[in-house]
Length: 142
Image (cartoon, rainbow, N blue to C red; front, side, top):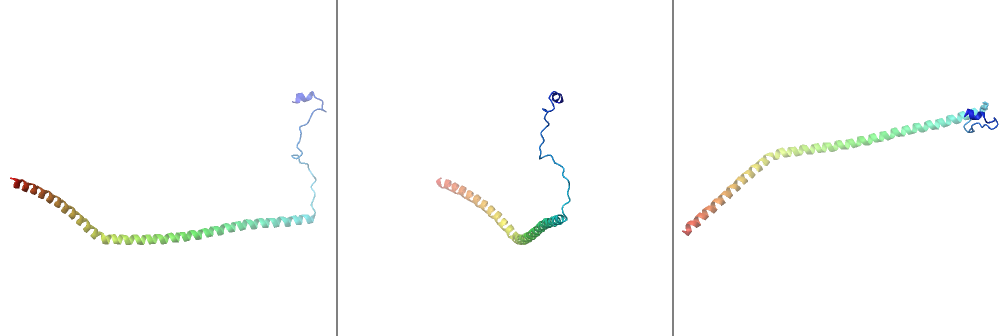
């Protein structure tokens, strides 16, 4: 590109366009008036105080929320403890009733076995009586 620029007269060469917004110009630093600095400092401290108050308030509110959540969780755990105690008490009562009724359950099982044996005996007796009846009828016909 430099070689191409050599053949072109200097008046026709274009420098790259510069964006005025991107280029900063140096200005002489001026000391603001003393009253201006005091006012700016007061404004800055006022805004910093507002900012810090907001931050501390937000943090305080977060801690209050955590405290409330902890209280509610504690209450829930107390309720769950009461429920667990009631369940434990009921389970002990049921266990006690089971052990008290265990001999009766054993008796019921024995009675059930005896009834089953009696039922089998009744079926055998019925079958035997039918055979006897058949033999009696056979003998009666002779």
